Length: 266
Figure 1 (cartoon, rainbow, N blue to C red):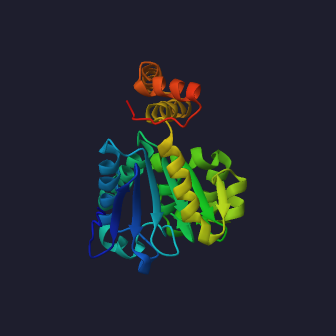
Figure 2 (figure 1 turned 90 degrees about the horizontal axis):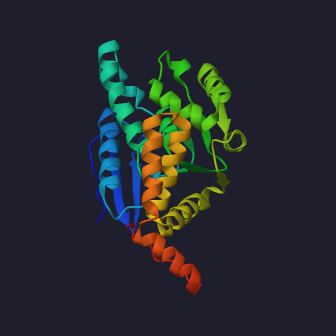
């Protein structure tokens, strides 16, 4: 059953079906700009999705024609007016980005229309990104006179590479979908009416794969990017555990029987 998490200033929806959790930013009248309450809601929905043992992939999108216009600048005079309030606000940002980045299961961003600021950060924290061919991307901090949290910047560097991370943040320029594909930020671009279906197809393909294997692969890639010895140890442990799993036995049996495997995640 879907959980709308409704609030007066927008909502973050969560719906789980067939091993796929759909997290939807729902504030189309503001181009899905996130209020401080919605940032917290995004963290909570991600944590709930990832704690569900039946969920194997998270699909993140926006309601209507846009993915996310970023943070709601209209409330900055109250919730982000100085260093003290900005620190509290950025904690909410960082927790949401971290919930996506640190998800043990894959995350897929389905992007259409506007993907700016915090929306760009959400997409950058995801593992796989695809977008409509009319989507536009921007990191406009330099036009607002503020700075992004360093952890969010790390996601942008990993998603775009250091040179384009600098170009985007220094200039606040906009990128087209074609340009975002060229720099490696996107895996695919599609017609606007095909993005959701393709994102669902990718999510379903991941959901049919061996969950323990997918988690081990994600952990290994994370360890490569972080260079952190503890991440490498975690990845090694997850990888080793696959060889004693029922899914590994099922994978070998399905290969011998020339049929599709039926993985249980154990």
